Length: 217
Image (tube, rainbow, N blue to C red):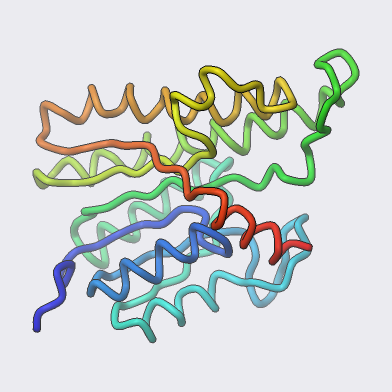
C-alpha cells in the first residue's frame, strides 16, 4: 500500500532527541522525506553534552520507511536557517510539513525562583531558544511551505492553552516560553489561512515529556 506521505517533504527543526525525534520517525514511517536538524552531531555535541545525534535520527527515519536527511543547524543563527531552507528548495523543490520543536532550555530553568532571583542570563537565553528559534525558522521556511496548499506547521510546546491559562509553570521565564509558542501557532494560523495552510500547537503529553527527561537523566 502507498504510504500517505509519499512524495511529501518535511522539516523537523529540533529532532535530535525526545518528541522531535519521535515525530520525525513517524513522518518517515508515513513515507515522507524528512530533513532533521539540531546542534548535536557525530562530530560535535551541543552544550547539552548528550549522546544522541541528528545523524542517528536521520537513520531512524530511513529505517522507518522514509528518507532521513540530517542538516546541522543552529536555529538562532538566521544565515544557517536561510541556507537550510535553500538546500531543501534546491534538493526537493517543496516543503509540506514544518515542525518547530527547537527548545534546549531544560538546564536553564531555575524552578520555584521568582523572576528577581532567577538568573537573568539563563532566563533570557531560555526565551531565545524557545521563541526566537521558532520565529527565525518560520520566517525562512514558510515562504516555501505556502507554495502548495495543504501545508502544515506544527509548533511543539508544553501544556495546552486551557491548562496554561490557569496554571503557573513554576518559573516566569519558563511560563512565558511555553505559553508564547501556543500564541505563536495561533498567529501563524491566521497568516497561513489565506494560503490554504494550517498551523497548530502540539504538546507531547506527560508520558513523552517523562521519556525525554529519562533520556536526559
